[in-house]
Amino acid sequence: MTQELIQQYVAGTLGEAEAEAFEESCLRDPELARQVELEQRLKLGFEQVARNSEEFVRSGNTGFWQLAVAASILVLVTAGVWMLQRVPQTSEHALAAVVPQLQLGGTSMRLALERGAENMPELPRGEVRVAIAGLLETGALYSVSLDRLHPLKPVQTISTLEGQKPSSPVTLEVMIDSDLLESGTYYLRVHRQASDEEALDFGFIKN
Amino acid sequence: MDFIPGGELSRRIREGDVSAESELIRQFEPGLRMLLRRRTGGDHGLLQDLVQETLLVVIQRLRGEGIDEPQKLAAFAAQTARNLAIASLRKAERQKTDVDSEATERNADPTRSVEGLVEDVEAAMAVRALLRELPQARDRLMLKRFYLEDHDKEVICQEMQLTEAAFNQALSRARRRFRQILDERGFSKRDLLSPEP
Image (cartoon, one colour):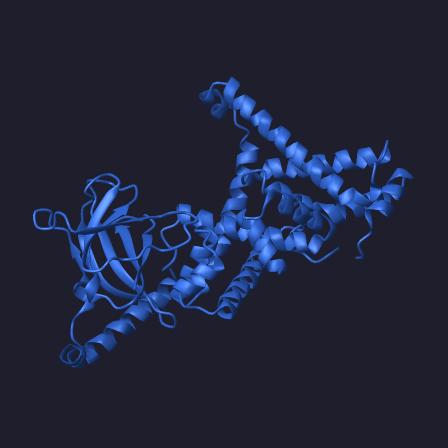
């Protein structure tokens, strides 16, 4: 219960009277105040990392990831033929670039980083034109990855599109074929190619 | 060290007991820091100034006329801190309105900026180290959604198909490790993380 209160206070979701009562409790209990300050610094650290760093959510120890990538390649090469023969290729085709002349109209969805948004948007059925909203460089090229979040496994990258150009300074569009995705939680990860900029993750749910 | 009730502290300070003033500082400083941290927008220099100012105002008041309800000393100190933070904010707003912004930037107090920056950098370094140590991308995403995007625990658990126990465990591990990293790197302030003197 105390930890809940600390989290609510730091997130600013306690009512004014509750927050003031909590502050007075902290003045009477220095150890509780220290716990709150630790939480405040942890949140500040995340905000700073997100603001300044290229290595965030998927970042890790470089050596570890190099080894992991090398191991993954080895496993993929040895298992590749078997996999290609036995597993139908489905979801990797779920992500595609937009071809403006062919894909006017139809279903669309907008994804934006909304601080404090309570629910992830739900991907409609069929072919969906997804508009990713953010501050983008119109002359730059972006990579867009479709990642699936598994409850007990590492994030699975289903497909990646390279060389995507924003359609405006605030929008980058891709196509997702919803019918080729299993139910679950997914992220579109947008990264400006050849840059140190922080990649942006846009989550959505497929039911 | 045991907590000394506000009524007793007030009485002893009024009677000129200097050790009671030290005790008041020991008891109230952590709480004042967290209260004012929330109201100073990451300006570490301002935070320090306001903590000192609040303690000074409270001690001077207790040495002099005293307060109406000594048993509510914590509430009095908290309200003093809030009032000082509001006054400081109003002063800053007035300066913003009255003074040419370029001139303000040119004359900004460099010490205050550096102090704030150091605090930011320390927190960021500790979080980076923490993230590097987390082997599961899921844990990193979970922390990001919780601390950066302010999503509710229930929503995160539902979307990431986590039990509440697993979520709490991961969060508690992350907090503990963050605290250790601050400590190991010497970023833990005396008034924040060290054991009681």
